[in-house]
Image (cartoon, rainbow over all chains, first blue to last red; front, side, top):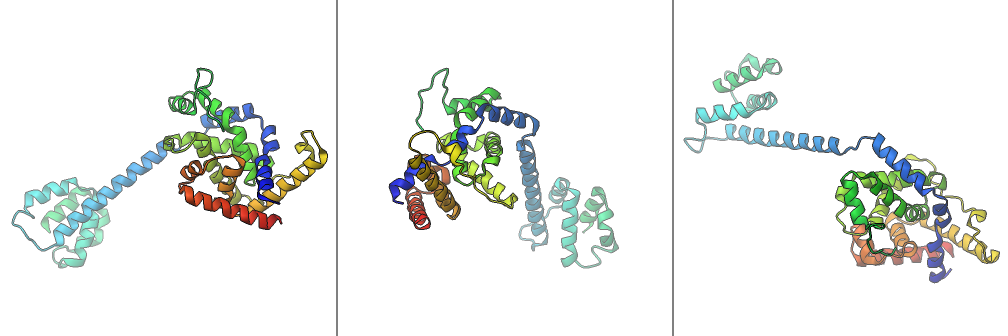
Length: 133
Length: 183
């Protein structure tokens, strides 16, 4: 088969099947399905916002943790008021993550037995523990 | 595919898409009516079984209408629709254990004229469909968009996110391989 015949035959591919398609019925079914099945757009948007929020929390928490464990460079960097303000912005999970990271670098005496019960502490208790640290 | 002048009776695809975005269901129905047959031909040529053709066309339109915000007019709506159809068909192929092309029934292809010529045409189409199944997806879709739908390489490239040169190469590879397979 030469190219010309090939193209000619290709132009006819599916022509009869397409002719048999009931276009009006197809349109009607498409509209019905669009009405019946909820659009995933809202879910997608919500999921994306949750992912973005989680990423922001991780970044902020990570930066804060790094700032806490990095040797002090400036006198104002670890001012207690500043730390307290930053702590207020963190969620319970952030604070737990932060405290867990302390376990690896801070002396046992600084974070005593309470470390074992971290998951049971509430936000206020975690804040107090951090301030003490 | 020729662009028709926009009138109140024949609004452009762009106008219908905008109307659909504003919640006009009839605009969606008009788009289906306008493009369903071309889409069905494309899907059929790409290997869609005829028994599934209606469902595959529906699914393609549903996906298109739901993701219409991603259509930026980079190509014609119909071409974009066919790329979505390609994805729908791929998903269908994954789900279905059988990947059988539509039976090429002589009776339904008989549209008059010389029966001998029709028999030859039908056989040629059957061979092409079988050959197309053996091509990589990109070659198959480029071939169909070019040979079956008559699109320019620029349009094909825009729809398939490739360059016109690459689309041309895919097309020529497809033709060469089809000729080898069919010979």
